[in-house]
Image 1 (spheres, rainbow, N blue to C red):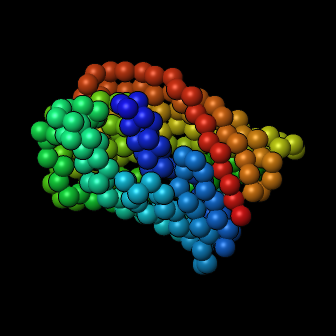
Image 2: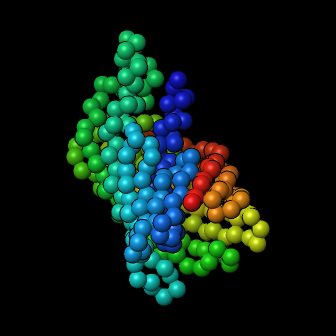
Image 3: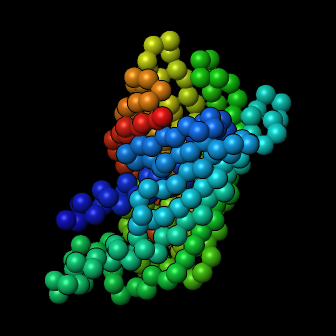
Length: 251
């Protein structure tokens, strides 16, 4: 049961802080993946993304900006409401069985207040998929409402950086990616992200991902690879190498 909770919540969080280029999907197109949000192409150079995991609802709007030289530019604003998901991680099942800490990733002794976060990001992309597309991005997240107790953290390196804003009130993220496709159905993606967590017990987290992508068509593709995580967290310095996988659909 504990591991199923971790896997599900990892799925919830993998939909947050998504990267991507400054390019927008075309108007009217929709995309969805097992571990990625629902993307909808809108008119007037806008793209909407919605986290489909209802325990951690969030919505983001990406909008084109004027190009700077050969760099295509975009901005993104994301709002997230984490309270429902964090309360769920306090394990109502354990309380019903008479052991409040059973299956709980956050001890029930800590209060989960009403919180909301806003994340703003600026994205620049240069190049094309055929010759290689480079993207750099950076943003800042702010939390509104009461803060979580720093003693009530989720001690998992893949999760804590994405929730640190609710403990510290602010979080900074910078990163980039390189994407290139071949003349066949294969392509690859290499990216990195750095989470800076000022004002808290954790300092930083570095994440790097490498993915090989097989695209059957514009309607279906499979991504497989690895994710490297390393950083200084409230629960100590750690480094992990994890598998990464997704199946995505578009229409």
